Length: 491
Image 1 (spheres, one colour):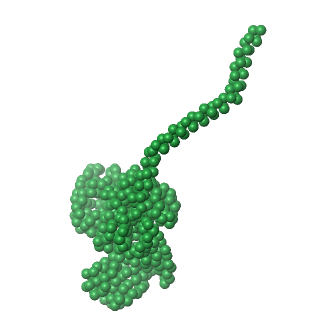
Image 2 (spheres, rainbow, N blue to C red; image 1 turned 90 degrees about the horizontal axis):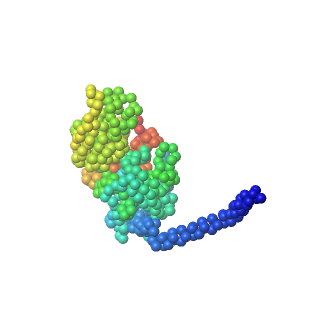
């Protein structure tokens, strides 16, 4: 009997456990469902009462409403020429209204080689456009349309900073007047794009795809802080017009304002000149330099900056006292991290501008270095400065002097004014004396239109660097008004 007494409670516990085994999950589910329903009801009430997400959505809509009237779709048509053949092309991209005078800003590569340009306004209206000027080295172009009823974009005074929220507008894959958003992932980026010499990009994760090129990048106030220009696709090591993969690049507003203002006023963008060749510190450390001063720089300098490898005689750098082996750490008060960054900063400065340069100089004897500061007065970069090989080649065939066409020069030679390059002087009796006499206007190089001497050298540089060329193909207008295509063999 005692054994049964002890078994009784155990049987009760087992029975209760059995009931719970079957009933418990149902009860737990019911409780869980009840809690979920209560939470959903509370969340719905909060959402309907106006949540932070509603405010964010409304802010995004407001940015779209504010910016879209100043965004345009750009269409360009033309003919690609080469070896006596021509092939029609149709390109498209994006742009934005710069001012009430009808100036439209876009990328130079969007309108490159175009013989006809058209912009579509946000309300669907289409307007004919003409190319007012383009700067190939920064990939910035300015178009002109009728300014009647046009809505200019608002521009920010300062470049954005890392972490800022931004919005990209444009026509990705021809989905016109699209919008995407993200943040500024980084600033001062260089991507090694062969077509752009001066790189100081904003990096953003806002979705940018082919067709966004030339479109505005705005901040949360709807003010333009940059212009979409390229994307990193993850294919190889370069940047291309492939599909978006998280890295978009935009030209900062400071560079845009500098270049656009000059293109509107003069049709050409002047560049600043310091007169130094430079190396990134990490590149200097990897190289075996014979110069003992550069060896000391590589060994003793610690930190960010760019090393001076060569100083041109009588240049602003030499006049200011900069030397081979010096490391530029700050330029005009801004920290320097790469050659591409400093190169762009120098180019964006105007001739006669005085700026501070902070630098470090190696002390070979004492095996250390010291910091110092100087003032430099920037000069104007001459188009031929970075094109010495081309200049020497042209001189070898008899072309002595070229210049960007101006109204005064056209009047001097008694020819109508047009954008391009005027031949000022050739060698008498040379192979080009009869076909390129003084007063000849060069309008095209390798089938691409040019506006000035900088365009002329840039077109030739790109052609020789990417494809090579046994001859120089020029579209010219002679003094009698005849238009011709010349093929000049290159030595």
